[in-house]
Length: 64
Image 1 (tube, helix red, strand yellow):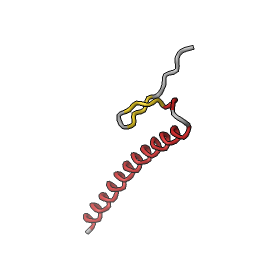
Image 2: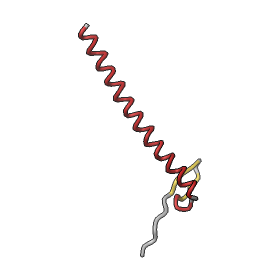
Image 3: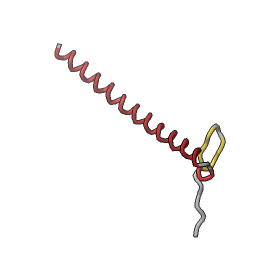
Image 4: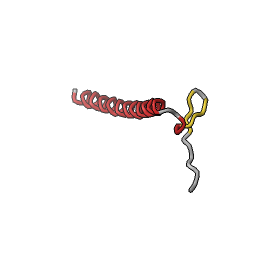
């Protein structure tokens, strides 16, 4: 059977391996990763909302 590769993570320029962390530490890493995804998704949604708002403002100006 082949060796299992460990998953490196960088925290403050120091490398750790996810598999070597405690369960509590792993939970924190997972929360951070989930929050990063949510932040990116929120930024994407905000960009869509701002674009949509500007389209309505432009359309209203044309109607006026």
